[in-house]
Length: 247
Image 1 (cartoon, rainbow, N blue to C red):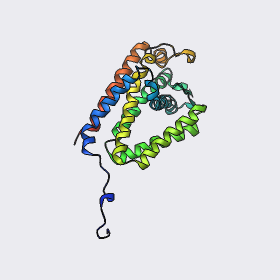
Image 2 (tube, rainbow, N blue to C red; image 1 turned 90 degrees about the vertical axis):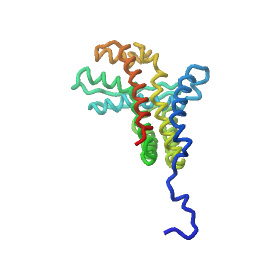
Image 3 (cartoon, rainbow, N blue to C red; image 1 turned 30 degrees about the horizontal axis):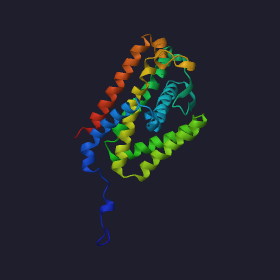
Image 4 (cartoon, helix red, strand yellow; image 1 turned 90 degrees about the horizontal axis):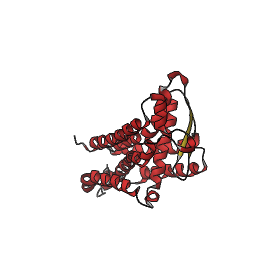
C-alpha cells in the first residue's frame, strides 16, 4: 500500500515516448544510411570506431564459437587498434570439408546474425535490458577466456562496461533504442567489408573467408561474397520488420 499522497510515477514502468515509437524506425534507417556514407569520407571511420571494434568482435567470435559448436577448439582472439582481428581455432576433422567451410562463413555472418538478435530483443523492454546485460557480460567474459592482444584487453571490456552501464542506468526506452541501434550497426558492418568479401586474399593472413569457402565448398569466392552481402541485407530488413510489426 502506498503512502497517502505519494506519487505513483516512479512505480510505473518507463515507456518509450510516442515520438520515439513513431520515429524509431525512421531514425534507425537514417542511422544505417549515415553510417554507410561516413565510411566513404575522410575521418568517418573515427566517428564509427567503437562500432567497428564491436563488429570485429562479432566477426571473430563467429569463427571461434562455430569451431566450438562443431567439436573443435577456440584458442584465442586478437583485436587490433586498426579494427582488424584474428581468431585462432582448431577444427574437428570428422566433418570433412564442411566444417572449415562453415567456420569460415560464421565470421562474415556473425555481425548480421548478432545484429538481428539484438533488434528482435528490442520488442520487449525487459528482454532488451536483458539482451544488453548479456552482451556486456559476454564481452567481459570473452576478454578473460579468449582475448590475447593488448588492445583487445582494453577495448573489449571497455565496450562491455559501457553497454552494461546503459542496461543498468538508462531509461528503458533508451535501452530499447540502444539495442536496436547496435543491431543495425552490426548488420550494416557487412557493407564496410565488401572489398574483403570479394577478395581472394587476406594479405599476410592468407586466404580470405570467402576464399576459404571456395576451397572447401567449391563455388567461387565472389559467389559466397555476394550471397552473404544479400543475406545481411535481408536479415536486417526482416528483423526490423518483425521488431516494428504491431500485434
